[in-house]
Image 1 (tube, rainbow, N blue to C red):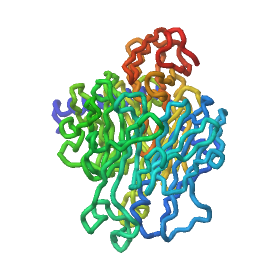
Image 2 (image 1 turned 135 degrees about the vertical axis):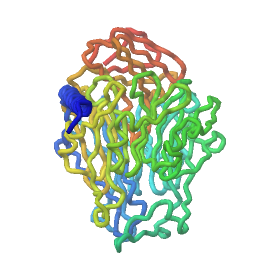
Image 3 (image 1 turned 180 degrees about the vertical axis):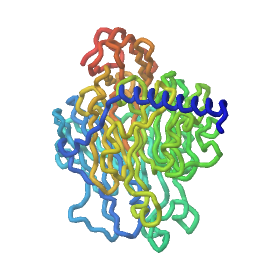
Image 4 (image 1 turned 135 degrees about the horizontal axis):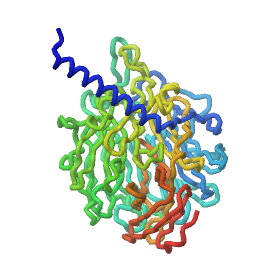
Length: 566
């Protein structure tokens, strides 16, 4: 016999569940956004090549990245995609190459690789783009397994390889990279993340249930000892050349580095650096403001997980998900480990809120790579997109996991909770891919962010945001005069009513990739931005008021408040 108390408790639980279900469905009804695959229609015919031959070279597993940037200064973001190359035992009918697609301004792209001269054919990994020489056009850096490459933009649709002249030909196995002005001298410096000592001759593999698989990097070199590599920081000399300042700057630690996120997490006006490492603790380098850095990851609470164990960091990004004015941090990990969301407490400490906020349990089964904050519905709160795909292409032979995996989208509930809307967004209806690098841009300039995903040994995907622009928005492109021309490191705060958003212009993010340098602010139903406040790397501050929405603004450092241009 059920007691009255028991009956009441069960009834109360049922009512609470039904109410929660009703509220969630009401919320989802307000977010009808759907991403649609427009790769073919856009004219993007790219297939990544990892060079696999069955030998299980560890190099094959990482995939490659991509970058959106406007190389021809026509107002439309173009797309550069990094590719792999043949490895011993693999001979392709056509030699793989990186690809530069020019945005035609009508939703389509044209392959301009040969004309532009950027068809690097080494084993490519990552890339970043910025105007390192302050001449008004965007240059391109590529990381490789082998010597990296710096292409200087000639301003006429072509590029010149200036790697040797510039002294930035890092020859180790590099992964991510980022341009930053760490010393605020108006010249963009270059940070390169390196992985491990590796050669195909020394490669080995595992056998699981008689099946050859990729060996863990922790067991790759010399039996059970791996040798991770230190990263590299190049200081821009202001004359087209760079100087290696890694040791003098304090970037001294070695790790299996995969991603880099640059942002001023402590709001002191200079660029800090977060590096995610595979199977080793992550790094957080605080900029001391005197040309040096100090690693404070353990002190800040972002070096290990809550159990004091290193994760398997793949991708990372800074972003203010709760709109409290400081940059939070998100890090992706391999399967059996969650994506980690660290809330910035504003006192040099971070708190792991992954499970309490709703992303931890959902992300545990997935092998996660690129990860990024994105306001996909322009409501003024940063959502989270995660690109997934397993490491082992034959995982299904000895596990219930799959090699292709669904990507994930989490919807931000005003900084309090995240809700998995992958199905609602159309991701579950797409063919699962083996996703790796990912880049964001409003490539069609319609007022919402679109997504490019570089899939490992598969065709790429361009996902157009179908409904994000139903809410109002403002896109801001900055142009430095006293600061670096690209405005990297510029902090922008947009305030409208009770909505306040803080973003930074940044190079390098997510995984092996770079997003559009323009910043898109979603404004919901608001029809004007009350205030736009800008803090440039030079220290100059500007403020603009009563700005019309649904436009792309170009803001030059030091211009009068009434001189905003579209």
